[in-house]
Image (cartoon, rainbow over all chains, first blue to last red; front, side, top):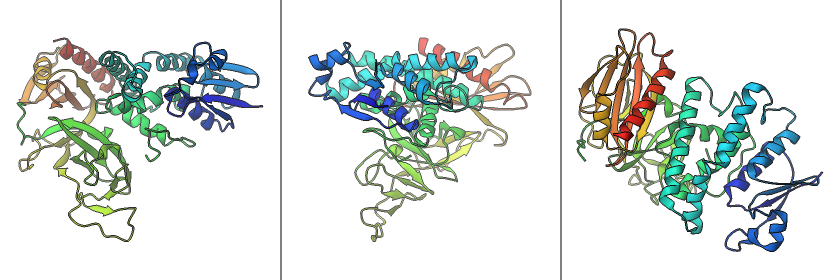
Length: 209
Length: 222
């Protein structure tokens, strides 16, 4: 069984897949794609691997998958015998998927702000930041409610792929000119996340908690 | 900025400043690191390492020292630099000291002042029994937030009265009271910190938090 990740070190979307592979204790090969400045993800060779021209891509025993959220679902579905990371019970499966979709949807405004500030992408930065703040507020309100109910993860009593999917672009907010001052529940959730066994850092997210 | 520099202001809920954590807070345009050691009280410092200016709210706590994320310089509760990892044999000079502000926890809320702190936080009665409800952050001035707060409908039977320039008490009868403290972040942003007391405070916390989210929408629509 071989797992191969087409990867870019500074990508928050690739990072969430690396986090998941780490939490599950899986060995894998990394193929480094020169996203910036090389734009290798738009090369003819890579477009054959992913016609959307996006990272990450994961290959697992002959299966080729794009989309970080889909990859998290696949890894938890196939490789997590405990069922913790992708709960199948009716009370948790739907909510976990809802927040996984949120991570790939609304929360990606924070990624856009970061692409603008860090890599010089030409986009409406104020619009991106406003959307990112709105998404952060939705998650902060949710985690405030969880704290009131005695919980600390997005869904249920253990971390799930919802936490893994949401973590990178919340934690990397500063790269897009977005502070954490207004999100006390996000700060405490991020600290708990960074204290998980097998957590590892990336550039912009410190190892020390 | 209309908020007097000497006045004490609520800047966070005590329970949300967890042990061994450092947190960013903006008060009247001043960036602060609000941190707590592994045990002990909350401390409020300028969000700036004296060494290279890195934000101390990015730092991490070991024991009861706050360490800067950049070079690991450790600062004790008094703000004095206690250790420089790159020079383990060196006793750090006394001149290396983080800039600290007065800090006190009262009514479940962390209070500070950018002034000398001589007056102390406001005295609103006994400190016992208060628990944090939630903080709110609004895209509005502190003045606009206070105006909307003072006339907000907290529900049937609730009465609202101004206790001080930036503190409102909401009474829901003999078994439930709530304090809401307004903090100016800058001219365009404010924070509100709410704490509750009374026999129904714990069971009503979720409902109060939801009500406060309505208040936030109200403030931002005004």
